[in-house]
Image 1 (cartoon, rainbow, N blue to C red):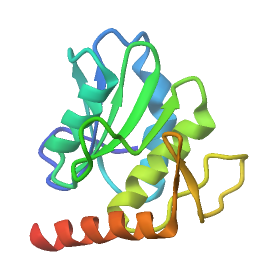
Image 2: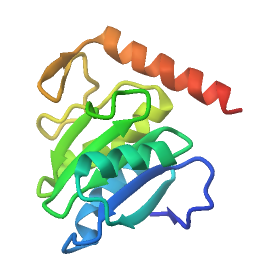
Image 3: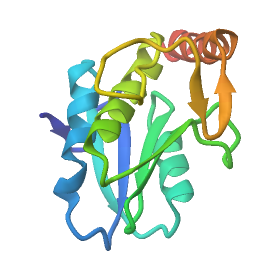
Image 4: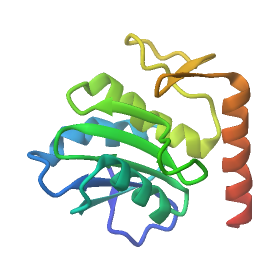
Length: 156
């Protein structure tokens, strides 16, 4: 697993609260990102809410994708093109399978490919996913992917 020192230009930022009891608890999240071939930058932060952590991580990432982890184990995946109060996915640190899937989905957002399912232990692409309680359709995914691709092209 490669964790960059902050000099990495293209990386997903993962920010965790300073009071998180054991940062190794989110190792499976990093494995999920790594399996998709996207670098990560991990940083400890004093920001209080998971929403603040995840959104700031997304803002600081040149890829526009960030993950925040609070001291209670809430994990959010955020994307800069979305409203600050509407992150993409939420999981709990105590669920290693979903944590790994969230990591993979963070990388897949960057790559512009379909998300993995959080249900079961199978690796199937999603036709519909739960988007913090709302159904996410293929059209929604296509809009998100179009934004990511456009952003990547603009950054070249």
